[in-house]
Structure formats: structure tokens, C-alpha cells
Length: 116
Length: 316
Image 1 (cartoon, rainbow over the protein chains, first blue to last red):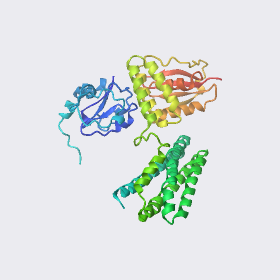
Image 2: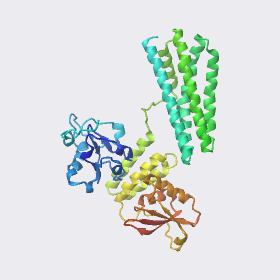
Image 3: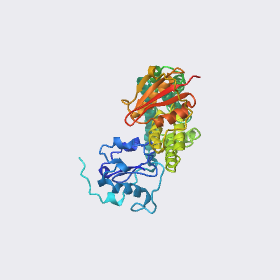
Image 4: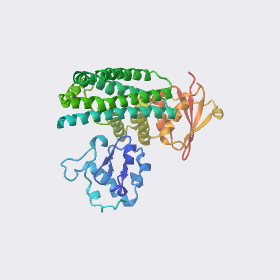
């Protein structure tokens, strides 16, 4: 079980959730944040602080965001573009820093027009 | 002045600024604790440690490098006497701060130390270093190098900005408890996390809050009543007289602190009825870690919307 970050985060990346997470398992890609399902402890602290309601407990994901459950996992289990190795479980996002790459699903998402 | 001299001057100024910011930030933490009525000791301990580990070694290194150069090459010898006296004053003020029992007095003392350091560093930046530069025969970059060599024994492993080894270790520990819970040992995971909470909740309330948050996730995986407790079940029927502690209006981060404060104030043999909007399993693990054998725990109402638990202090 894990929490999942869905499409509303793409190009927003508010990061309020990152500060709340007690196990530092929310990692920063290029255009979205991702929750590491192997590190998440299901506490739910991230969910209410997200200003765009991008975060759901996996059982509560709306149908439209279902693909993001596996996609969050792929960010860690599959090698990202330009990398030979998958991220795996880095043991904390702060020490890893921004990853600078995204999964195919997020990378293919149309660029969101953000307010200037 | 040479380019390396300019760079060295800027580096020294930047370092003074960083030290000043570090002190001010910690003085503010003491002030906030005093204003909020929280124990000020943890913030004072952090402030005093910072003076001991960062400020005083820096001062000692200056006394071996920059100050002798100033005495040898400028007419500012008197000022150097004053500067060394200020170093001693910083040290004594920090020692006094550590003994203050009143939060407001501690906040004032910390503020005073931060201000003294600020005016002290300003004299170095604006008077001493420019005098050395004007003299022109001193290699400021070489002096800075000497200072760093002097500092090496005092600060062996210089960590990155904002490094917090305690927080980093705690993150790893909580991740490990998560893995344990996923592997089917949720009860053990919760006990370990609760012990971690008991270890840090006085010295690092910020980290304790993170543990409490994680416990709320970990306990989701614990089936049935938790933990296998040493709590004594009380059936003496004295709930009627107990006060209610309804924490539903408090922010989740404040709840556990409020509950433990209430518990500490209990006389042996008395209790209160905790009212919450979820099963307070995480709290029970914390009681088990902190107060095993001394508390009682009885569910009076168990959901689905409201939980009422009589928490008591057993007779010694």
C-alpha cells in the first residue's frame, strides 16, 4: 500500500508534501513529484497539504489517475531516460536532490500553462 | 589587492555572515520557545553547542592568525586587545546562558550574544581586514589558509549546509520500520518507532512529530488491539469523575504533546478520558515506550467516528 501522486502535480510541484513526509520518500523529477512505494509508510501526512489535490491513497485513486499508481513505482523501478540504472530505494529524497528526469507518462504530458 | 586577496576577504566576510545567521536563527528559536511557553532548554542547548563548536573555534583561529598580523603590521594593537576580550565575553555569556532557568531571560541572553557577535564581526570586516589590505604586505589568502588549518582539529568533518545527521538517521530508521511493517511485522515496527519517539521527543520535538506521523501509517497495518500492552485495565468504575480531554480541535501535530502533558500532571490513581477522531493506537505505542507499567488504557467507545479512551496513571 502506498500513497500516489497523480497528474495534477505535473508542472506544479508545490513541494508542501515533501516537508510533511516523515520518511522523506517524495522525490522530485523534472516536472512532477513521485512517491516511492517501497519507502512510503502510509501515514497520509502528504495528502491534505497538497494544494492541487494530486495525492491519493492507492485504494482511493479516481479512475482517471489510476495509471499514476504504476507510474510512481516505475520512476524508481525502471531506468529513467538517459540513465543506465533505476533509482531503486535511495533512502531519502533530500540527500538525492532533484532527479531532473521524468517517467514517459509524465514527460509526454502536455505542458501545463502555469500562471506567470 | 590581488584577486586571491579579494576572494579571501569576501570569503571571510561570507563566513562571518554565515556564523552570524547561525547564531541569530538559534537565538530566535530560544525566543520562540519562550513565547510559546515551551521548554527553552533544547533551543538553548543547540545555541550553546553552536557557540562551542563553530564560534569559539573560529575566534581561537583568528587569535592565532589574523590578530598577530594586525598587531605586527598596523597601529591597531589596542583594538586587538578589545577584540580578544570580546571573544572571552562571548564564551562566558554562552556559559551563563546554559544555566538560565527562565525562558525569557535565556532568550534575552541569546539575543545579546548574537548582537555582540554581530558588532564584533563588523569590526573585523570594516576595520581590521581593511587595515591589513591597506598595509599591502600581508597575503590575506595565506592567512585564511592558516585559519582553516587551525580550525581543522576543531571541525574535522565539515558537513554540507543544513546537514542534520540525527534527522537523516531517523529518516532511515523510519523507512526501515516501514519495510518491517510491509514484511508482516507491523507490531514490531510500531514498537521500534515508538522507542525512537521516546528517545527524541524531549531533545528534538521536530523529529518527534515526524515519528508520530509515521506511526499513524505504521499502525494501519497492525490488526486488532495494539500493542500487547502492560497497561492495567481498570474496572473500578471511576470514569464518572474523570475530566475529558477532547483533542479533536487541536492540530494533529499538537495532540500528542498535549496528551502527554495532561498525563504528566495526573496524580497516581487518577485519569482522564481522551476523545479523538481516530483510534489512538499510535499514542498507545508511545505510552508503551515511555510509560510501560505506569499507565492504564481502557476503550470506552471505539469508533466509528469518535474514540474515547480512559488514560489513567496507576498507583505506584
